[in-house]
Length: 204
Image 1 (tube, one colour):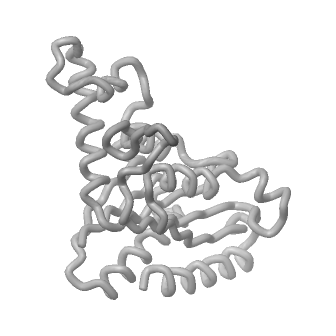
Image 2 (tube, one colour):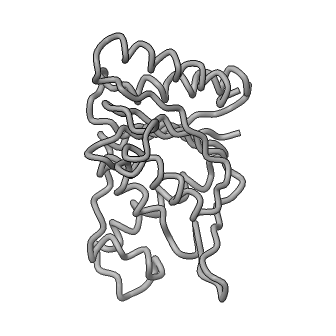
């Protein structure tokens, strides 16, 4: 079994999501001996955002019409989508930044969202091609969004990730959530305890 461990927080050692992904991976490996882990830190190795050059993956890699810049960007996209497709389990650290996900994580998603690789269009609509995987998202939030209709309407973090991984055909998407971590030490401690309990269940 192959596990891809992804962090996207820019807060280094001060990141709650990084702590949760680390704990999740540790728990998963403990309960699934023989799992191999590959690590991707998107805050350190951030793919560039989509541009005319990085859309080169929409053309055959050996195409003479590709510029040198497109070929370089093609190689980045190919490496990322191949790494994603090879993984059986993906653990993603996804803090809430301005009601959504870090732009670094969005840049990664844009690179792996490739027609013919992770999804395709059919006569009846889009079809995911990356099914059979398990995704565990470590979701962290400074405030509390899950307990009210207004809060749920404001967040485009968990809802977006559920949608995009579902679009890729992944039906097993699990969330380890710690919210309210900026609302004082007591609230943060409660959130971390709840997240630890979730990890014990979801990474079993």
